[in-house]
Image (cartoon, rainbow, N blue to C red):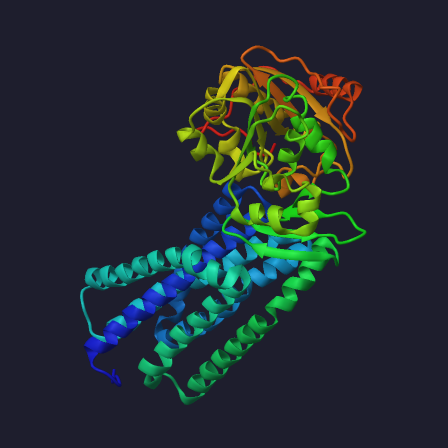
Length: 518
């Protein structure tokens, strides 16, 4: 066939097209995994669903592409236009389905299959096109195509977390990827194989490409308004701050006259209406004893530190928080700083931005009290923070007579297996435990499991473990002021937690996490 360029240049352009399209395809794949993990929860399950469905669909797409080999250029152009539109809009559709439709998993399956079929159809058609440029043995052509495909996948895989997310975010990033996809795919066909198309086919491909670009560009212009509407639908119309940190989405709602709420990745982590019940129950029983040196793992909102500082005799508090943005908000946001009583500005408090597990591995010295104020063990990303190894590292830092307080998730029927698995992990680390729970409004805001379980029933309590080298007794210092926690409520919480006990559970470890939802 006649080409507007030399055969060598034409072959290079086809391989470049393979490279760009492969990079775009992997970005779509990672975008679906990331957004589904955020919206639905349980990242292992969502990644398994997306990857397995897409690989299956790619095989189906390869088989279907055999029917298009006689019209390889037109077929490839049509596939790239469809892929750009479907892949580029997938994040918006998934998010809209979660906010307004409640059909996130069905949409995830549909987009995974559609994108997989279209990606799978690319390579057979590209193989046909590159052979039309210059005939070569099949093994050499396959090697060249897959080399460009795999290198493109590498670039797309690295660009997603290090370029697309920081610069554009999830929604705009997918739209930009779709625009790159349609320009690369249609440009290759129209520029290099235009003579292989009829005049009508060229016009249809050009118009379709421009329409898709216009749709993607319009969506990119309107994406901020879309996000605001979605946030208002999710959190109400009092969203004050919404930022995407390197770790998670952070949303602060509430203003003068209404309670402050802090959401992390869509989960209500702090409610100004009742957070004191959670933080008092977490901190005060552990502080009933020596407490000169205290370590808070998590707690970047400053609320656990606030309760620690109520106790006289505290000389130093170390707070280890993963998310720098949470620390900054706790220090600078007027509402949140007022709620935590500016605890992170206290001269006795030292804040370190670090992963709690990594920090414990290199930590030196001992603490009278260690408070683990971390997300619920039912959240997949938190599994290592509720492992036997993690509790072993924390136990190393306990001084003689020291106590470890652990937020271990709800004790209700739907979650009690995870709660007592945490207990098994703490005991496997050589500590003795006392379990108790607390109730408050709104129920169960202190973390919550992955959304896949949270949709079944909202937790009504927060479960805690108090641990030490000898079994610690529950108690409260009567001289320290508290808003809600009483000795009778603490004793009742211990009795209720004990009724939910499950015996004989193995601990969760790094190599065998055991917090999968039911």
